[in-house]
Image 1 (cartoon, one colour):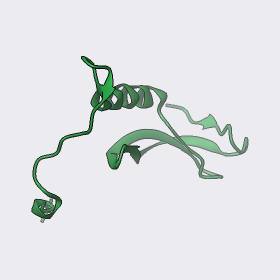
Image 2 (cartoon, rainbow, N blue to C red; image 1 turned 90 degrees about the vertical axis):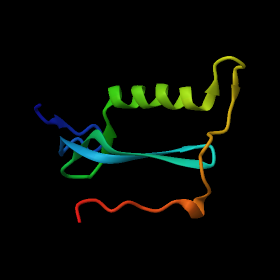
Image 3 (cartoon, one colour; image 1 turned 180 degrees about the vertical axis):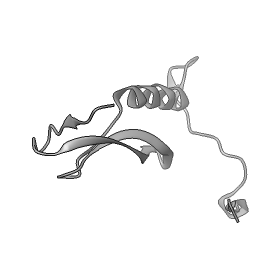
Image 4 (cartoon, rainbow, N blue to C red; image 1 turned 135 degrees about the horizontal axis):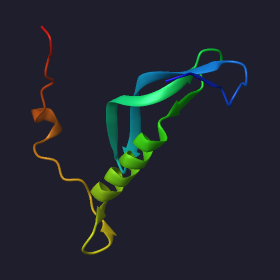
Length: 91
């Protein structure tokens, strides 16, 4: 994929990168660690892939709305925060 001229600074070139996308969903934070984006090599401006953003918006709206009642529902989680243990990978 060829790089495009940066729309922010009009000097640099935007190169494809993979970044972490974070978004608040009520009192919770949703994190997508491998989001496709482009980043300017001069000013550092970042823009996420429009297709990715549409997919995430549709998915997050599905999580936050109850289709039968048209009301927002709270995400349900199992266990208490103190029961959670991080998992180490690649050790």
